[in-house]
Image (cartoon, rainbow, N blue to C red; front, side, top):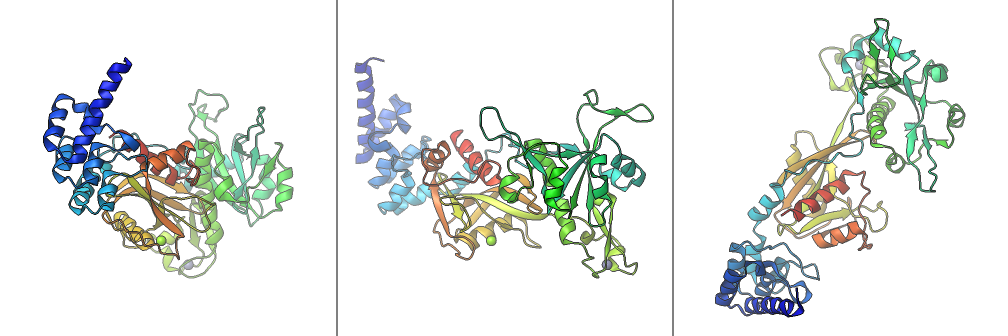
Length: 457
Ligand code: ZN
Ligand code: MG
């Protein structure tokens, strides 16, 4: 393009923006008939025709631009939308028109065609083979089988090793794996809790599977156990270098591969349940481990928990809703921070689902309790097991129907609306003033999901 053509185009954009700023509906319409691509062009400081019309209260121009499909969610260099501008300058009829939620809700919630991302901790690496949990003979044979893999937990932390990479980068954390022979003595101690995790899923043609008596190929079984033996002594059992038990599970357990994270999600949750529910919750008697570690039955034969099915006998899962709340203008999201967060970190709001409550109602209640913002439509996006100790994080998008923030300081320290552009800049590292939780968290994935969704509009 020659500089002459360029300046002609710039001149046309300027003329169009000027007409919008003056409220000249005729000229705006005429120019758009001839050059439809003008509609989302911006000029000085990133201002679009819609923003200029909104700034000066030209309602008819705003209507015309919206009817022709202009992007009301774009932001200027100060991260303001046309809605923000109309609101700031007190043009309420225009800000009301721009904040209409039906439009925003549809935009937010119609975008489920995106392929779902896999959340950390959610991979089903092993086949759980739950039907085998009641097969004592099979389980016992597997326990002493030379191919069987044991994961060793101490104080609910798995023994891991840190691989040192050649290039000096921080290496991946891997689970230490043991054979039956190496841990047999620990398994016999009364305080040890052993659970069956499942069998490997790999294609039977692959390497290490051994043949059973009838000649069929048997995938290796995996077990996990928690022991109260001395941790320093336990570390000496491993042949690998750099072994340790992670001290802060919320951080250290996020460095595993996706495959191993999936195994830890299952193992740690079940072991944590055993560590906190040693006695019968119904009568307080002692209990016995059954079904490969997936059940605890009361030893008092008269106990009510032995009649019928009771959820007290099985490992518990605690549902938590975690939601990214979208502003009615579709262009900002609500994030909050707890006092315990690292400096500058903001995250999605979250809270436990209460008994007798739907997921959607839990989202609305939690958001209003913590931030004062009222929520309308709620859409499920994806979920994530979080084994500290046994939460199921239910990730949702939600659309706000009010925007004023009133923080409940008992729960969170701060909550704010973040413009989309600022969020994008922050992901790129171009806006270091605030940071998001790490990629392994569903909060991070929900924010990314929203950014990707918006960019496709
Ligand atoms: Zn009991
Ligand atoms: Mg709460």
